[in-house]
Length: 159
Image (cartoon, rainbow, N blue to C red; front, side, top):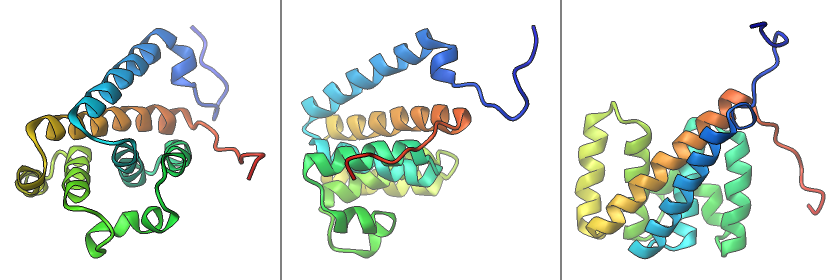
């Protein structure tokens, strides 16, 4: 089998559509789990954005920032999200979910995991903890697809 052109990335979602659609199906189920657990759309998008910031996924950052704004998130909170620990703009529930998302994204950091779980236990139910972690797992997978595919980020004509 011949290799593709040098420097050109394979769009993993296009090359292996069945695998990609299976992941999309899992993400849809995770959104349902999150909603059933009581995580609102803004909190889900905050998790998606924070994980995408850590991973440096420009495509997912653009997508989920627009979704957060549509859901009613403010530009102020989005602007300070990388420094959420240093503000009073996020609730205890949001802080707990963001800590879990960061611990899920850096699983080798055992101290971060223990700290995140301790915070989560004080602010989130078991269902909310599970949902927040599943949201982080799912966006981590999509980040890797977009990063490895080098999905382009294009401007929105309406902006």
